[in-house]
Every structure is written in structure tokens, then in C-alpha cells.
Length: 237
Image (cartoon, rainbow, N blue to C red; front, side, top):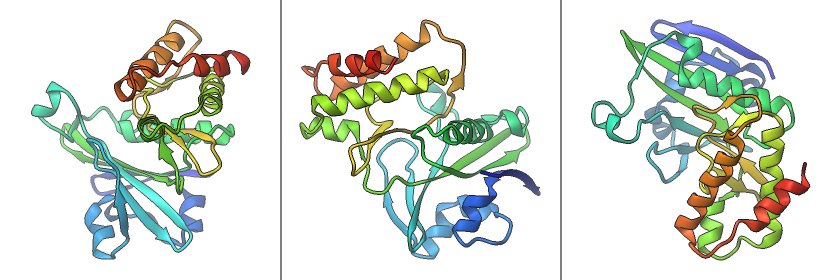
């Protein structure tokens, strides 16, 4: 993976040159790639994910799909601005931080989507951002599997083992929930959405991650125990 940064007027782009070359995009990445209009005008939007950010599924090439996710605020602060953040320099923006963190974990062989590119558009003292990652084709969210009673004990154990791998890599996933865990066609779990996540030394945050996941799971099935997840987590140690 070859990360490269460039600037075009008020836009700062950090991209993986290998991903863009594989997709047949030989020219420098353009801010237009991060707009829904660019893809809709070419009839390359093939779906949309539920949630606040309205992520789009893109047919980047005949054989590869991407996910375009704009950054959106939640909670009370969203009433002031849903998509603007305070400018603190390109490297400290949410897009650049998530791109570099995801690339780091991907290079370690951990199950995260391959990051393609991020774009940060500065507007004076604020900025907007979006991130493109490779789509895990056919994957379903753990939340969907729970609702449809398809999350068996073996799968939950694999998810526990996956979480342990990330904790061993020192990842604190601040929003570990049943929507941010995907399961592919082979039954392998993946972790997505690393916005605001960080690497840190072991501590109480590891248990807090698991408790957050438990609360999320119980929103979809209040009777589902996470004992299998904890069993897989401990066994992977």
C-alpha cells in the first residue's frame, strides 16, 4: 500500500496509489470522486447503506465495488452543523486519521476494508470530509444476522476472536456495535468504521468496548447472551 497526499485548491487528498491504479484510475485523484453526484451521473451507484452518513455503494470497476462514506455529526451538535468540523490541519482531520489508521491495520493483515482514499475540503475555519474504502461484497452486518436469528454460537465465537486480535493490535474502537461488524459470505467477520478510533496501551477501554457491543446487541435481541463472544475472545488470547 502506497499512501500519497496531495492538495488541489482547498481540497486535501490522501490516497492509496495502488488501489486507484488497480481500479484503472491512472490520473491524480480528483475531489469530484468524493461527491455522490459524480457517481450518480455515471450510473455507478448500486446501493445505499442505512444510517446517518448515507454511505453509497459504487461500482468502481466491473470487478470491484467501493463504499463512499461522508462524515456526518450526530447528537445535539448536529443541529448546528451536520457535516462541518473545526479545521486543525489536514493530518488531524477525521478523514486523514481514519485513512492512516485503517491502512496501518490493513497492512498488519487485520480484517478491515482496504482504504482507497479520503478527501478533506477546507472552508476557512471548518472542513468537510469523505472516505472511500473497498466494499466487502456480499457481507451482512451482525445486526441484520441477529434480527434474522442467523448469529449462531460459532459465529459469535469468531467475532470474539476477531475483537481480541484488534485489541492485541492496541485498537480502541470507540463505536464497537453490531452494525460495525460485518460477516462475509464465508462467515468471516470484519470490522468497519474506524472514525475517531485510535491505538493505545491496554487498559479499561478494552472491557468498555465489549460492554458497548453487548448493549448494541441487546438493542436487536435483548435475550441474546454474549457469552460465546467472550469465550472466543478469551480463547484467542
